[in-house]
Amino acid sequence: MFSNTLKRLFFLLLVKPVVFIGLGLNLFNRERLPGSGPAIIAANHNSHLDTMVLMSLFPVRQLPKVRPVAAADYFLRNRLLAWFALRVIGIIPLDRQGGVSKEDLFAECKAALANGEILLLFPEGSRGDPEQMQPLRKGVYHLARSVDGVAVTPVVMHGLGRAMPKGGSMIVPFNCDVVVGEAHYPGDSADDFIERLSRTFEEQLDQCLTRRVEE
Image (cartoon, rainbow, N blue to C red; front, top):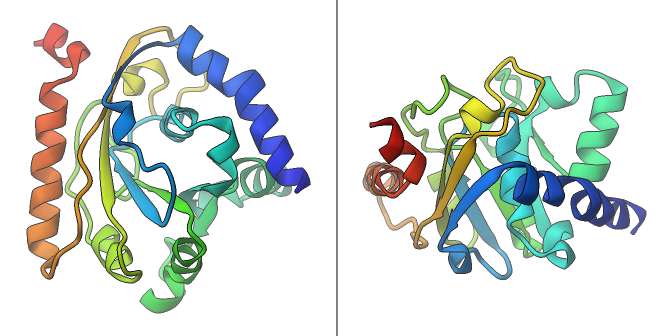
């Protein structure tokens, strides 16, 4: 209960003002975000800001049920960061070092979905170069298939890689876009699902105002 209160206060008093006032955020189709779980948000990833922006899109009351899936080797590397990541942000740590089976790797994610939570996933696997998409991995498909009725909502962000690029520690006030797509159900083929999701990401990128300015 204390962690949930802390999480709500952190986003209400600090993160949301930074995202919606400090950043010039162009937000499209926010109404497509799931109102409840189980559900998965699949987003592109090339900034430390990505998770904070995604979580800020949800009402404060809903945040305890919104769980980012994040790299254990990064977020649990020291006690202070681990406490913040687990207790305030509420991450589900994912072991990227290959020390566990695939079944155990997603065990906590599956339990969260079964508990009606909303997972935030970055199917590229890691942060790439600013504003450059990497190939999508199939883990998001297998996780969506693990619990009946789970849909994957694609979200594309553009500009955050410049606002806080990989390796950066300061926020630079660039205009940024967030485009929420229509939900996809996994279907029977991982290859078909990943192709559909990749195509949707490209279509969403075409809607980004900041990308049009760059072109």
